[in-house]
Each structure stands twice: as structure tokens, then as C-alpha cells.
Image (cartoon, rainbow, N blue to C red; front, side, top):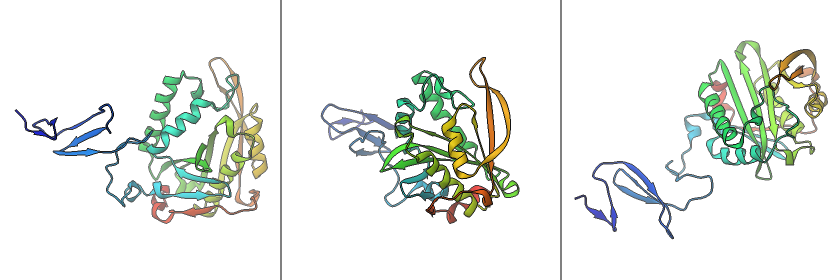
Length: 265
């Protein structure tokens, strides 16, 4: 019979187990050592040594963009619970569909699974030749949306593309323009991009207004099937550095030097 430690039954082989006992903190047994910690909503027992971070090995996680009201950081797993809560609370009215792929139409359980798969897959597929940075956007510490910045063969094309979503409760406050301006400034001033592309359906005036405010110009259209059987026209847009209508502030950047290679630079 395996020996008992502090009244708990231990397996004879190293393994990882977890459980919850009434009135006690969750317990974990790893390779012969008992560990305990208080669970915080959305968090898992931290196994990273003190003073260490995954950014040591995936430096883009250390990138930070700051505007007068917002902090933008590449999405980490610790952000996903909050992101899912904002998504589930609503991004747009059900009668509208601002996205080329109608991902928000899925039932809640499928929406959660699809969202997690999408961000995990996108992270795993990122290479210097085809990269994506989904920036989580926070205001006053709370997560309000996501601003995506992507590039393909960027070292040659010097072109980036953007996309975003913003929680319905945070729309109409100028946040969309501020977070887009932040990544465009980062692209032009730090990545040395020579062009920024975007697009929006013609029935999405909020997104089109942000683009117009920042100086984007029309660059053709595309006709898409948005939802099954639904025809929609996408207005494509482009922005050059000399046409960029800069705000009255400069985005503050930290952690870029360590992750230049992520962008193929």
C-alpha cells in the first residue's frame, strides 16, 4: 500500500491530480510534492518561477502600446476569460453582421469554443513571413475589445492590415478610433510600414467613420456572401503615412526591441 502523507492518499507513480474539498483550497500533487493555492476566477495555479515570464521565450508577449486612455497588449491566455465575457455580452445587434465571417452568429457554447480555437490556432500559425498580433485593449484596467494587426511578407510588402471588435457597452466613445490609431502609429513609426489596409461593409458606418477620420481612402469594393444567402458589399480602404491624420498624442511603445524578429525584421 502506498504511504500516506498528511492523511492524503498518494499514487505510487508520479502524476498530476487536482480536486476540491469542501472548506479547503484546491490541492495539487506534482512529482511527489503537495502544492496548494487559492483559486482566483479565471486563473490556474501558477507554475512559472517567480520573476519569470513566457515573454522570455515568446517576446511579443512583452510588447505594450499606450494611448491617453488605453493599454494594448498581445492576447495571452490569461486574457481569454475576460475576452469571452465581453464577446458573450454582445458586440453588435443580432440584426446586423459587421464581420466577413459571421462568427458571432454561433450559439454561446459554440461561440466560446470557436473563439478559443481561432486565437490558439492563429498564434500557433504565426511566422515572421505571416504574422498576426491580436492586441487586447484595456481602459481603466477593464478589457473593452480587441485590435488586430497583421502582415504577410512584411519585410518586402511593408503593408499591414487591421481588424477589430469592441464590446457594445464601450461603443460610441471614440475608443475604436483611438485603438486603431495606436496600431497604425506603431506600424508606421516603428515597423516602418508604408501602407495600412482595412475594410468594412457599406452598412457599417461606425467602422467607415473611424477610417475616414484617420485619413483612409477608398480602394475598391468586393461583393461577399456575409450570412448564408445574404449579399454584402465590402468597401476596401488604404492609408499611406503621409495621409495619416494623427491625433494630438503619440503612442507610447515598450518591449519592441525584443520582438523585432516576430515581424520579420
